[in-house]
Length: 288
Ligand code: CAA
Image (cartoon, rainbow, N blue to C red):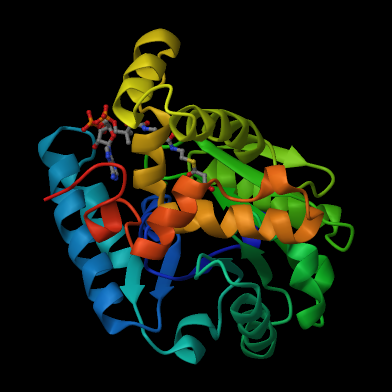
């Protein structure tokens, strides 16, 4: 199999990441089925596509024809069997829970054609924790996009010990077709490239707040003004989801049992209060 054999893609999960990944693939000319267990999420994703595409046309970033074609390329289907039955490539962007992912990959293994590649967008669950739920571990890898997926240019392609080089190569090629720059990680490592770097920054920022040195607002202002980052660490955690910061920290801590890997008290407090950032309208900032 090579990249030219990839024509139909199923994106699983219509949340923060999935709805934009699906649209990226549709804009790149692929036949895309976006699926989610929640019809409400699918309606939201479809609504987003129907407002985003005309806005791009109005801004002069897309032609009317490209926008119409992208809308024709994408469908929103709740039933997983129907959405994944005849696809060549799956990008799973469901909830970051390992048991759910393993169950999903076992089902995908049954539903999809034997040649289909099954990639997970997970940012911290390496595919070797999922691949053995399928009978095609050589066709399983991580394909990690960044938020917002329509804007951010990087995709991390992580080749596990079970992943064939052909699978990793096709995933790199697909990233390119979707207008992204792929970074090929030849071995699995916790946090991949970017989240390892980001975690160092975020942990330091959280430590400074926990120590009462400065507020989240001041630190965000300092980082945007001094380092030129488009968002400071607290604004970014609100954007990507404080629940995700919590799950990433807990997963890491369970693996290492090192206290320094435990989520910071501030993250635990926000997680328990349900203040998960933009998605719950409150995190480090309020969003009305
Ligand atoms: N969805 C789609 N497009 C969006 C968008 C969104 N939510 N928000 C902004 N855009 C687009 C706009 O349409 C605009 O596009 P054009 O320039 O082509 O017209 C462009 O982005 C800039 O938008 P704005 O001028 O409105 O806003 P901005 O300049 O403040 O940019 C931002 C917004 C792109 C989100 C910018 O703040 C940014 O880059 N933030 C940092 C994001 C980041 O670091 N992401 C990585 C997070 S880590 C991660 O994702 C890993 C993980 O595992 C969790």
